[in-house]
Image (cartoon, rainbow, N blue to C red; front, side, top):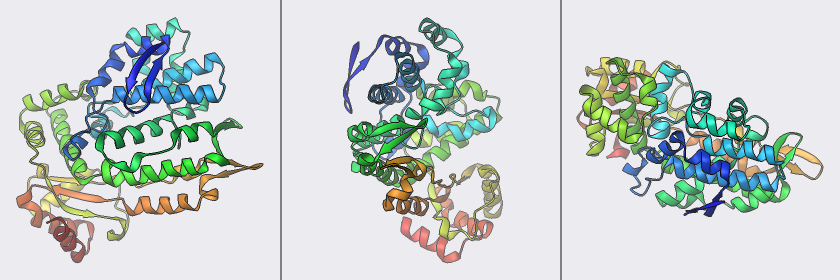
Length: 394
């Protein structure tokens, strides 16, 4: 075993398989991809990497696999999936996903091409591991629930790690208790009665971290600006697949040398001259959910009304929250029940998550009034809503 000192978990022990996988270029690339993308514009300490997170997920998956008493071959597959689960991320992690996905039509969990070539393929072959099985586990099938499910090693690690590096105190969860009380029941990962409070605390942490960190308005604005610049690069001939394989430094360099909108956006981000919120409202401010037309098309409509170039209006319409976490099974006596049924807090959390959702329209500071009024007309927002939103942001 090789030991790595980690600020979250103490010493992480890498078995020979994990060591070999960690030394491959696709995993080492994760050292140069920030876990939280551009959140360091808000929290200067948020510079931790996907590599650190992957080691943490491996550690928790290793611990949970040991607790569940999986056989050695099952453990190897789960541990490989845990360490490799994020190698499909593009630069800046989730930041570039929305910009690239229309051109690639793949999600970051789809990594089969990485697994079937180069050093990764060789390592997996040496240990008798099938790339398609590893891919299946990463997507959450069968024992892959340890890595990808409503409550899993991935979420446990990123909540604790992100809270540590941002300094936000909401990610404190009793992960040791939670792991100790997890079990496999009829082929599904479940939590026993003694772990329900620990599971609920994880969901509370996730809810509180969303508006404070993951959906902080400054991060959302910067992410929208990066996405706009990437789309401009692709329209000017850049290959989306090549951008996907970059790390953060390579993306910044490509945008800086790309000219036009891409160069302007990355220059603004580097100097923190960010766009401002013209509209930033919750679901209750919309007469009805907007049609899922592309954000760029909605931005064009607002820009046309405001009399501005389309590239200076950005629309941010996040996916609406789902309630999957409440479906996680718990074992109470002889019964199997969802967390929602046994914990009244979970149902409240699901409603609170919808309440924290925000629809945003961003623009240059000097264009805010024009864009706010154009957005009101375009999306049927009440005038008072737009005016109150602008007043709150002063």
